[in-house]
Amino acid sequence: MRQVSRNSSHSVCQSANCKLKAIDRRLSDLHLQWHDAEDAYFDPNAFRIAIQTCIQTARTVTFILQSNKALFPDFDAWYVQWQDQFRSIPLMKWMVDARNKIEKRGDLETHSDVTVSILASYLDHERVSVQVETDLFDSTQQLMEKIPKYALRKHVLRDGILQIQRRWVANDLPEYELLDAVAEAYGHLSRLVHDAHLALGLLAPDITSNVHGLTYDHEAMDGKLPCMIGHERRRSCDIWLATGERMEIETKLVTVSRAEAEKVSGRYDIDFSEVYSGANTPEETLRKLFDVARKMFLNDEYHATIAILLKGIIPVDIQELRPEEHGQKYVMAQMLADQVRRVGADTVIVIGEIWTAPFDPEQPLARAVDSSDKSEALSGTLVQKRGEPLRISAEILRGVDRVALKASTEQSGGAHNFFSPIYDVWGRAKSPSAEEAQHDK
Ligand SMILES: [Zn+2]
Ligand SMILES: [Zn+2]
Image 1: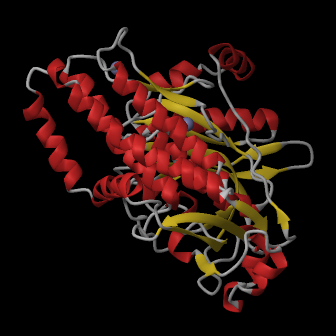
Image 2: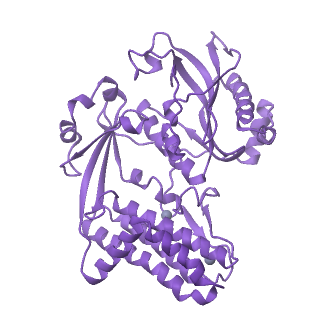
Image 3: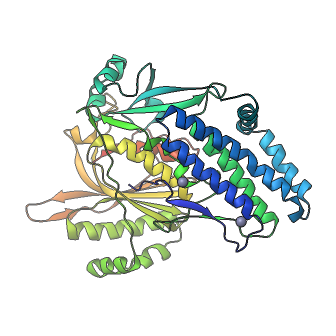
């Protein structure tokens, strides 16, 4: 999975000699100061200084904008709408109060806490979180002793992940982690600065990745930068319960260049450009991709798990998911959902090999791979922000010296729990499915 790291992306103003460059630069300063606070997270004194600097800088963005009012044809009429909007956002009100406090009365009152949660499901409400009185450097064993026994069922012990997160919280803003609060405020200010460009007839700044040339979706990210989404994962320590070892998710970048695509096309007799351009609906895209996947699987006797992120029928990103242990998939599901938010994808297709078994109501959390009734399949699943999920699968038959695939079958409605974090991003409930089969690999 691809990680978005420090400074891998920026907001870039597209107007040469932009009239708003003082404001662009101040917003960019806030971004860099936010990373300074992130880097100082485990140094209480340095963090206090850095986060307070962020809060002060954030305030100056609107001051500079106001001092440039002469640039606007009718500044007051335009600005009053933003003032009204910001006044109605409790966080923005807190930012103003916090800045006044820092400059006139003294430091913010903050505390840090440690949250330990067990991740053994894709479903957020099944996550067991406990706030523990602990030191961040307590051993795993010490932490384990503080976790309620009921939380440690068999599958949890085998596949579960202990996520340890230290958080800084302002005493009068208990519902936010502090970096997150500043990131959200950055998002609001960045929306304002974008709109200021448009009000002057300038191009809005563009958010692109330095590394991959991806274009991110300002609106889907609520004005934040890609590095501000899922940032807590960069500080979380994931420990695999089965072994007590720290778990790392391999980051694997898949870029499919045109040349590579053509090389692959030649090997499999596939025209990739036709796959995307020839489809008029996401469902058709899935069908075409699945036909390609069948050819590749029969040729290679293997198919990697690939997630294709689309806006409608336009592919915007491709990620390879390569979990080594089942537990990593819970984290990957969250990481994939973060990427869906960053690029503003409204459609996701995941293609790969899976184990499948009939659903056993007696053991709702059992995994297909453990079932006596399991079979192997090549599977492609489509989920959408609007519209129903669709799954195409073909059973895999492994003979002595060759593999075969049964005919493809389609099933609409219902979606595997793996997609729950993506559904959360889209603000839609997982569509209920009475007889959901178990799938994993
Ligand atoms: Zn950044
Ligand atoms: Zn600009």
